[in-house]
Length: 351
Ligand code: CP3
Image 1: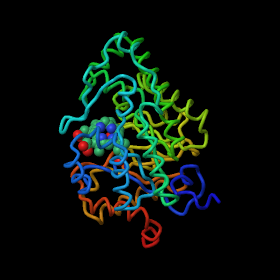
Image 2 (image 1 turned 30 degrees about the vertical axis):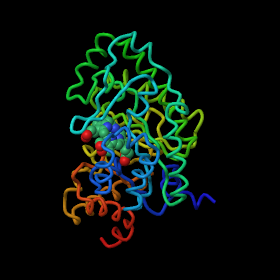
Image 3 (image 1 turned 45 degrees about the horizontal axis):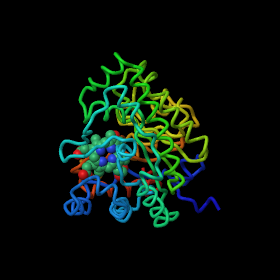
Image 4 (image 1 turned 60 degrees about the vertical axis):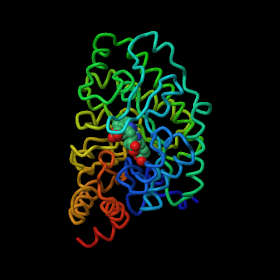
């Protein structure tokens, strides 16, 4: 019976599989012509991600084009914020903007605990529809932002270069930051449980900006809240594979594994073979391919993917990029990535 479950789900659970499954972070988005066309018709990011028909359609775009082994909900890590009382927008060429950044105790105390069913019904609907549409041809992935990364946005108020506002809070008023991080941890865990109840079969937490912390501060402001989310989700959904991604993670790889996640998603600044030796044997591994590689030639793209897969052999492995696919990536090169992943056994047999 489990034979028929999606390859990505079986691989993520540690079953032995014929090849590593393949999907891509940010696989729906601007590099695709169909997405850009739809964006012209619906210019607001919040519409595209909060209208269930649009979010469903965009989530399916890469599946219909490339048939990856995973289909990720089209949404954003910021999408749950309004449900907690924090308004945001995503502005072309500026990125996320928080209208009223969180900077004091009164604001943190005024936050609502997230009630996903009430404030994010569209997410539940889209996940259910995706699951029905892809059946066992692909696994449906849900995701959230981790407390530290969400806090970075809501405290800074926008994307930041050096995180000086949140670091001022961390190193001047740590109790305030801890209160905010704890609020996010509980809400985000509830949100993930809701996503799993609605159809997500594998989940990924993005702590994209935790690589900006030195390890001692990672242990203080990032890891305990990652672990709290993992624990609260595992209490309810112990068999749902949990992936953790951090950008700039080379200094904290071992720490990522001790949060209780099943799979660590690496960026490309560490060699895959070395990354594997730094993680316990039972921890799976994802990612590691430089998104910039997809600006290269098909031959070089293929050879790097083969190198990565060979280095991860013997591990639970999910083929993915080391961060989201970049805008401007030629679609044909995205296709090369997916096709190489799906034909990896034949390609390796030839060398
Ligand atoms: O992977 C997928 O296909 C699902 C879609 C997805 C989006 N955002 C859609 C999106 C996912 C998983 C995210 C997560 C996300 N959002 C992260 C974590 C992943 C990472 O990249 O580290 C972060 C940090 C954000 C916050 C955010 N949202 C940023 C930095 C931006 C880019 C701003 C810009 O204009 O470049 C966004 C906007 C966003 N989210 C876009 C997409 C496709 C681009 C805007 C658009 O297409 O109109």
